[in-house]
Image 1 (spheres, rainbow, N blue to C red):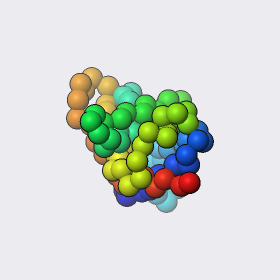
Image 2 (cartoon, rainbow, N blue to C red; image 1 turned 120 degrees about the vertical axis):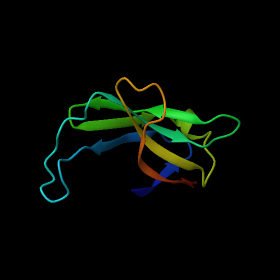
Image 3 (cartoon, helix red, strand yellow; image 1 turned 135 degrees about the horizontal axis):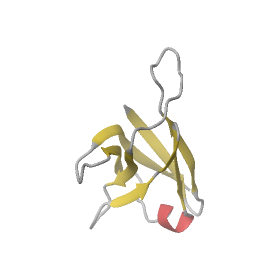
Image 4 (cartoon, helix red, strand yellow; image 1 turned 45 degrees about the horizontal axis):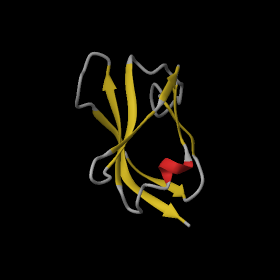
Length: 102
């Protein structure tokens, strides 16, 4: 899935929620399996990683404005799912670019 995240200078990001559903037709929520979800931003010199908090079928992300302000416009990002037991890698859930406002 492709996406865009809008960041506003001087403003916290969030909460942003991702809900896991059983299928696109029924839209029935189901719990996230064991593992972790994070947003990885292609910042330099090292990538920035913002972890989601998972509760049942909802994964939430909230980031303080001081961290938001460090991300340049048009930065590539990927929201990545890493199943429990895996040390690295993971599966891209959403990929896209950051749009900075103000």
